[in-house]
Image (cartoon, rainbow, N blue to C red; front, top):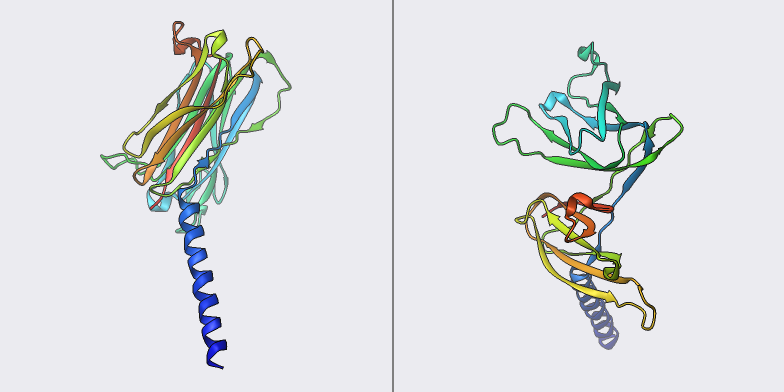
Length: 246
């Protein structure tokens, strides 16, 4: 009976050690970041719908990086009350709010929404949403499109990777900027998959590693351009939004 008891204890200890080992390995494994680019037609009406709770003092405010590419058209409360009769919203309850934009010129831009209390001097958002928009140089059907966004949620110390294909033989390469280097730090870059031998002009796959250093919201902005032409002549771009947690 004692032997059976000790066998059970041994199995439990072994399983516990395996679980701790697996958890430690998982925590150190790089997370591949996700990004979403909304490709829309010229003249396309666009919608962004978010939830907010103005009874807490927090509301969404937005900014567009390129106002000559997108224009703001209207704002309305679509759930939980109306802009004209805010008292219809139950005390302490939130509401769904919606912004309409329209694409007016081809190009890349992003809409950044910050969730803030407008009267606070520090103006530090408790949440951020970024919608990346690529306006194509072609007209489309005039129907509303709901923009999509992806936010990555690593914990402090977590390593993250961005993997992209580039073709340096054409002169084009990916360059990146981090919005807040206190929250995110760059670790290293490397060739993940080299060009295929014997194939002229073959692309290569690059990997960039980052690490979450401190709780907060930041993003990594990648631009694809020829270094001698400058980032203003970028032909592609990608944005990765990261919300680091404890």
